[in-house]
Image 1 (cartoon, each protein chain N blue to C red):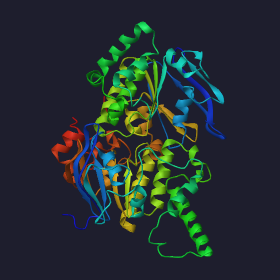
Image 2 (cartoon, rainbow over the protein chains, first blue to last red; image 1 turned 120 degrees about the horizontal axis):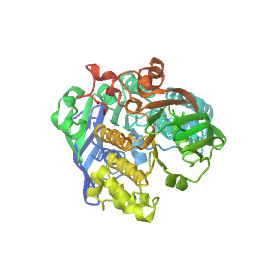
Image 3 (tube, rainbow over the protein chains, first blue to last red; image 1 turned 90 degrees about the vertical axis):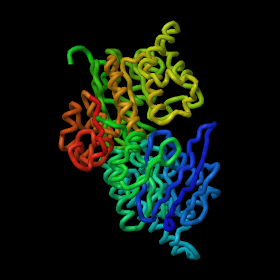
Image 4 (spheres, one colour; image 1 turned 180 degrees about the vertical axis):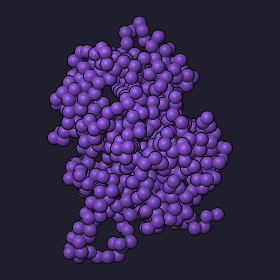
Length: 257
Length: 265
């Protein structure tokens, strides 16, 4: 199956102290699409994210990025291969400015733009200027432009998540994994971030895999939804199909009067 | 309001290092109320809670609780006086069991009352009663939020400050937490919460306060704020995106989530 998948997870298993947090999960993500991973708290979604991005090792199973096995790679190698992720609790270099945090996200990324190019100093300066411009644009997007010069450590919890999102986009990954991008983000900004994610997919051909509990966002954004419960994938389909799936309603959505 | 309010915050200023985050925030909370504080990221909502609870020093302004000035009082003393705070993250001891977490909460009440304080909680949270020896770190996100709430309740508070009690929760777990908050309030415990699932929070709130740039921006009853076009546009977002917007606005549209997400009544 899924010959054209950009990301594929096959039979991944991971236990913690006898509890199988991920119990043979398999699914595929098509390129240029938005896939959402949903399920109850404790279903294994974040554990799976950690395995895909190399922060945890699975005990069994395979993770394929553009057809290549990555389950044995270190996180930075996986980033180099084009897969970037954000965290539920955001991470930033708190002693650097907000703008520098974003600029740095591009610098270390061996993307196609720089590959094989021996930079002369002038070219490097131009490259740096471009990076700062792009970083400033991203900060406007997440409404942090007012804080560009502040130390990242002075941002609020929600703002740090937004900074993390801007950093992830700055890296220009082929596929971006977002771990609860909307949690703790104000409602109007959620709408704006959603719009931007859709834009990145439609105009730049980017691929997204998200874990998200905001069902409005999930239903509006997703091309495919993968539902996990107790470490396994229990359903997969379009938003329309998932809405009508009784197993999903029972395990996750809950039957509400 | 007839008698003195339970909590009275006047002109509160606070910040970190050189940055001033709160520029004179005021809030009065009466007996029996649920109050939600909403606003953009970085508006100072969490900072406000932390300053009221004395984790951050107030640079100006005052906090009065039960008609006494408690500005600058140590947090453990505030807890003993009946004012407690549940942070958004790091709110349980992950390596300790459920029972041990609750016991730590009970240290705030007199020795002779501790057992009874924990038993009262067991009626509210049967799940915690069933698995006393489970480590808190192995609980799911929703269960962890409930344990944090339970531990705060063991201290016998009259007023609880909650920082984003529903963040990161699945729809079912979010339902559970909001239902539990209504139940807790029914016991006479006053709740002041910061929430980004703002529609959902306002739906169960007597009153709401919108903070923006560290200042009071709007105030009103929960229902008034939910229907104030300006508040909706600036702070709640369009009808179809944003937390539990399905609570009220989109339940009438065909794109609403399955079964809708009805607010607890």
